Image 1 (cartoon, rainbow, N blue to C red):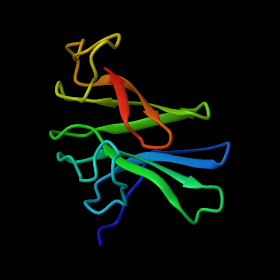
Image 2 (cartoon, helix red, strand yellow; image 1 turned 90 degrees about the vertical axis):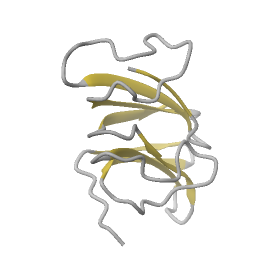
Image 3 (tube, rainbow, N blue to C red; image 1 turned 90 degrees about the horizontal axis):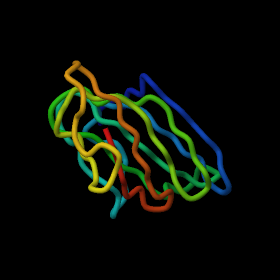
Length: 130
């Protein structure tokens, strides 16, 4: 079992959920079926997002998030009861974004690009822009 380093971490309690987000190098972070990704996506780090019940006895949803090239970094999260909004930064042009969002591809010519992603709190299926 690899260690799961969460150098940047945020936690929120909303309704019946505890939502945790961070960044990891771990290949065996616990994930759930049907979430964005059940496997480490590659590169050096991935963003991770998990939803637990208030008693911390049941992992409701958990996922890796990012791309397969470099350092994807977690910044902060916000929950509204139905969705989890995650912000962070990535150096990669192939960061997963969805069609119809504000910016569908990397916009700047700098090293890092900010992102915001919206996840369904129950399944951690994502909608993202960079």
